[in-house]
Image 1 (cartoon, rainbow, N blue to C red):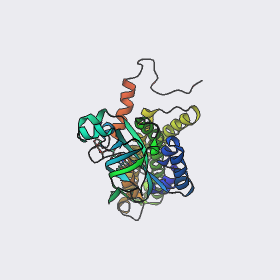
Image 2 (image 1 turned 120 degrees about the vertical axis):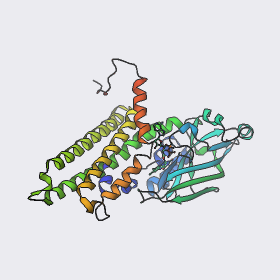
Image 3 (image 1 turned 180 degrees about the vertical axis):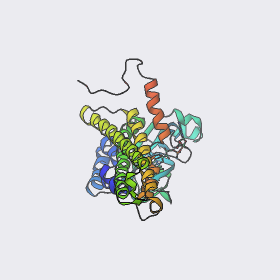
Image 4 (image 1 turned 90 degrees about the horizontal axis):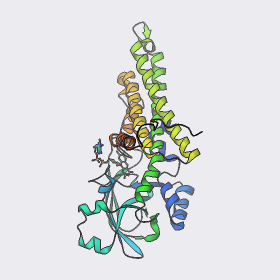
Length: 330
Ligand SMILES: Cc1cc2nc3c(=O)[nH]c(=O)nc-3n(C[C@H](O)[C@H](O)[C@H](O)COP(=O)(O)OP(=O)(O)OC[C@H]3O[C@@H](n4cnc5c(N)ncnc54)[C@H](O)[C@@H]3O)c2cc1C
């Protein structure tokens, strides 16, 4: 992902099974086979449909419902803004599974839905009743973005991922890794931006010297490089913990994504500035990087909320004696 980001943030889709990983990990054999065929073997894209027009960061506020009719579910609601609405072969949809009586008696917009635990299901895009509409985002335009509408979509019960109510666990586990991946995309883009800017600074003369000899320029490039290196090291250390110890630190992964995308944005902004007016044009990739990274400071959880996740976890922790910085197990 880091290397993809160096090339172009839109190249992130080339690697990995993306959000299809949730279907592969938690799906029934039928879902796993379908996703393996389409996403793993054919390289098609898998999307995630969590956000809704009235509620993005607040997962409990989601109102898309899947009414349980015994052997099947009827899915209704609207998702968006969602990436890959035109390209994805299927979506992992986060919704609330309710009984027909619950659905009939209570208004879908009611507060009662907040108490229904989140569920996840795999929904092939071609299913009857799934409609999409696109919009034009500021960045990340390599792939479409828009809304998905579900109009009483009939979904087999075997499309559920895990058991009904497992959605939050699936979301947190998947997005811990995913957020680090998106962080690394942005850090790759920032690294390329710093390198290109250093190269330009060496060649560009101002008065009798080069831009690379101006102390304030050097200092800003040094800060950007240090921030990007620190954020990259944090992301890789969290990935290493996941890989070697199976330790998914949801709070740290959330904050690492926030820090990495903020630092990457800062680095690219310095890069754009030091490219002068050229940086403000499409002749150099700074403006695209800036627009793309800007989106990833909101997507997959807005950074403001992700920093709060870390603070809340620390505040609720065991108290004095628990190290702020996780230490390697002996
Ligand atoms: C490029 C891009 C791609 C996306 N792709 C997808 C996708 O594929 N699938 C999908 O489901 N969604 C996707 N989203 C939607 C994204 O997940 C939501 O935009 C995000 O979760 C925020 O929800 P919201 O837009 O409803 O903002 P809101 O929840 O209305 O929040 C607005 C702002 O208020 C602030 N805020 C909100 N809550 C808090 C809080 N508790 N503490 C402090 N500040 C807060 C934050 O600054 C936040 O940005 C994408 C978004 C973008 C920008």
